[in-house]
Image (cartoon, rainbow, N blue to C red):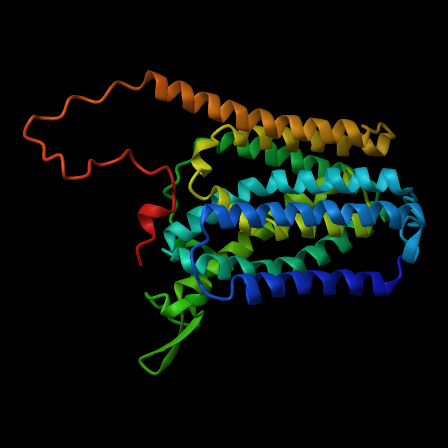
Amino acid sequence: MIEPYVWAGFIALVGLLMFLDLGVFNRKAHTPTAREAGLATFGWVSLALLFNVFIYYAYEYKWFGLGLYAYEPMGGKEAALKYLTGYLLEEALSVDNLFVIALVFARFRVPKQYQHKVLFWGIVGVLFFRGLLIGAGIALVHYFTWFFYLFGALLLYSAYKMWRQKDEEEGEDFHDYGVVKFIRRFYPVSRTSAGGRFFVVENRRWAVTPLFVALLVVETTDIMFAFDSVPAVFSITTDPFLVFSSNIFAILGLRSLYFLLANMLDRFSYLKYSMMGILFFIGVKMVLLPSHIHIPELASLLTIAGLLLGGILASLWQERKAVAKAPAPADEPTTHDSSEPRPKNGNRSLMVSTQKD
């Protein structure tokens, strides 16, 4: 049995990392540069991999009861591979979440300098909800093995639904979200960001700002995505500490990854197909588990990595092909003032054109 102070220590570690992130490195509201986002992403990935070193030794030498989980005892090498596979799986499935977050920020016109704050507090809610979902899911799959079929079917349906909606328009009005209508029953919604605050007093009444509404929408969308990603990791392992830690480290790196890719998200058009493939693969793997047909973790890791890399390369290749086929620009009139800057091609970002507060 895993000692309770292991959970307390891990949660304290996560709390310290989040405090350093928002309270020290990002204390002043600003728009992270590409360099800052790249360094932060590298830092979070490095921390996740460094934690895997701890996983190896803790499970190999049975520190704090790790590796002695009654339903799935394991050594260090197996635990490290399961953790790494779960981490990569969660990161891959989180990419789809980034597209939705970009749309949420664009629809609610959240200024870039406050987006990190919204994502930070969104993570706090995610930690609590993911913990509940993981705990309930682990109990269910051990006491009712037919839940593997249910979870597998859920993932297969998610892959099918993603395929059906791959051409869905991006003009969805997020103001029609049920959570927004619910808020309006109790509080008016302000039209200003109020200096990055979530609440503001207008006409002697409390009102919520678009930042708070965006925060709730981000939370609800993550809950929806959690019903895909959390069952998916159960196909890798049911060890509660491995499931929870791989989930949390993937989520912690999501914010910096978002700012790194914010201006390039729609360049990776084929990532949707990668995620469909990953969900389909994991769904099939989960359906096969009750029949004791087990796909090795290394094969799962390579399949997930291959599908993700394939989607990225296919997207870049398609973009290069489209640029090569684009007609050359017409010659400028001779009366053009050379001192006036010429307009550039349309920005690819979903964010820039809609976030002038």
